[in-house]
Amino acid sequence: MGKFIVRVLINALALWIASALLPGLQIYSSGADGLVPGNSAAGTVLAFIAVGLIFGIVNALVKPIVKLLSLPITFLTLGLFTIIINAAMLWLTSWLSGYTPVHFTIDAFLWTAVLAAIVISVVSMIAGALTGINRRSLSSGR
Image 1: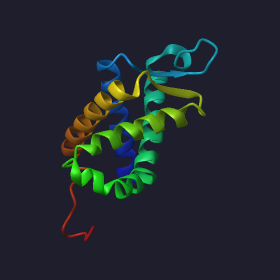
Image 2: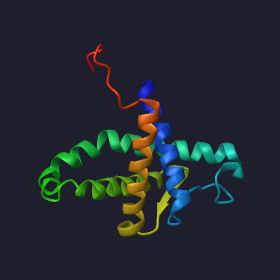
Image 3: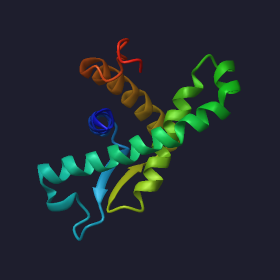
Image 4: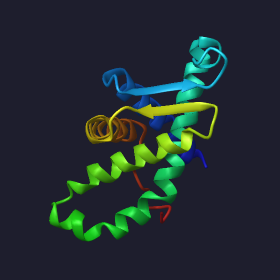
């Protein structure tokens, strides 16, 4: 459970960096003013954590199935199709967040989602290496 929470926080950080770099990514709430609750720093952090949670669930449940089904095309493209899969997971996260009070929007799938997928992958890889979340202990057998 602890690893999942760390992954959600890493996802939130990666989404925040991607939304800062790419103007086509936005996170907002459906409150009265259309902004993150209270327009405060805490509200913004909670919004990114909420979307990071949705993104983590999508990556845990849907992504393995999509990766398995797209294995032949991923093999033919020497792994580059993985970027498209990651972009599709972002799009699915955006669609699912439409049913929550916090919305994650992507303006154009082809460019913004693909660039965001690259940024999020790089940030997640670096943050995962710094936190040690991706390391497996040989003594624990995991």
